[in-house]
Structures are given as structure tokens and as C-alpha cells.
Length: 222
Image 1 (cartoon, rainbow, N blue to C red):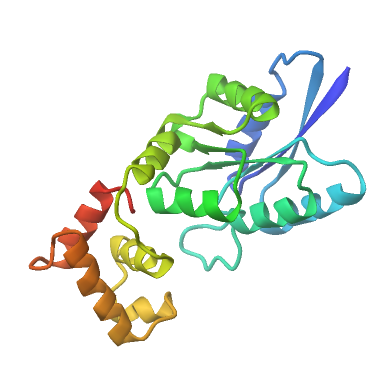
Image 2: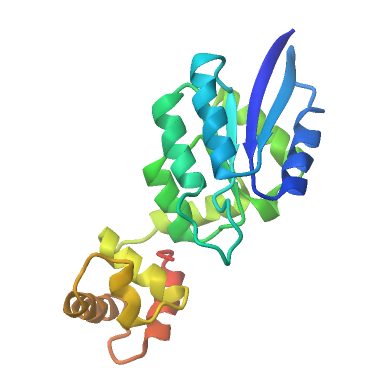
């Protein structure tokens, strides 16, 4: 019997052990499923690097946020996804994250081009089994909320560059305009000009930033 090797990386140990419990009990053709785990960026990075010279994981499941929300996050699951794409390109990469916003999901689709994305609130034993089967045979696999975000983004008829999207995203999470320079490599005057342009594009030129955020969310940009 062949062994299907899976690596699950999540900073919540109980969540990760739950995945391991479910995955190792899947009856899958002639495969015996073996799940390895890591609960930090450093552990995950080490296991991915070690797999280069030993055995490649068939599937790598990645959480995006690998640090408590109130701590600085020098690295995250997206960084691990990019690393895995470069070091072990034959491994399938699947994100399992609580992030369901359009900006985050589409950003990862662009940077990593994963073989699947599951929003955690969509995950149950049946979903995990479907994800494994689909990713191995005919990827990609997206959970319902992830697919909804992707479709919403594809339906847009506005063209925004990455700086425009970053401005919208940071405004949506409460970043003040005066602090946007800390996240976007533009001058304050350029940021203000872009905000005015965005309000014109979304038809909110006479309204406040909240109206812009609502319009952008309705169009699937954040």
C-alpha cells in the first residue's frame, strides 16, 4: 500500500490535531495517509526544507496567520507557500484559513497559485476528504466561501493596480489615512490623489471613506 504524505501547519495545536485525526481516517483507494504537523512558521519551514532531501509531501496544508493576532508577524503562511512552490514544486499546496475576504484570497492566488483554498468555517470531515481527493486528481479545490470570493472578484469591471487595492484594504481594516504611508510605498499626496480617484471610480466622490469601503466590498475588491 502506498503512503500519502501530508504536512499540516497551523499555530492552533488543537485545530491541527483535529485535521490530523480526520485525514488519517480517510479511506482513500490504495493509500495509507500519514499526516505530519508543525505549529509555527519555523517548524513548518524546517519540515519543508528537510523534505527536499528526503521525501516530498504530497499535500501541504497551510494556515495564513501563524502568530497570535496581537503579535508582530514577520512571516506567515503565504511566505511558506511561496517557499514550498520554489523548493518542492511537486507538492500540492492548500490554504486553510479563517481569512475569507476577497483581497486576501486573491492576493494568495496571485502570489502562490495554490492547489486549493478552504475557509475554516467551511471545513468539516466531508470537505477535507473532498479537498484531498480533488487536489490529488484534478485541482484546484475551493470551499464555498473561497469560491464566492473568487467569483465576486472575477465579476468586477474596474481595473485597479496593487497600490489602489492596498489602500482599499488598509482603509477597510481601520488604518488611518495618515498612516497609510507605513504600508504603501507612496507619498501622502499620492495616496490622497489615489483616494480621490477611487471615490470617483466607485461613485462615492461626495461621501466619506466608509462609503468608499462599502462600495469596494460590494464590488469584491476587499
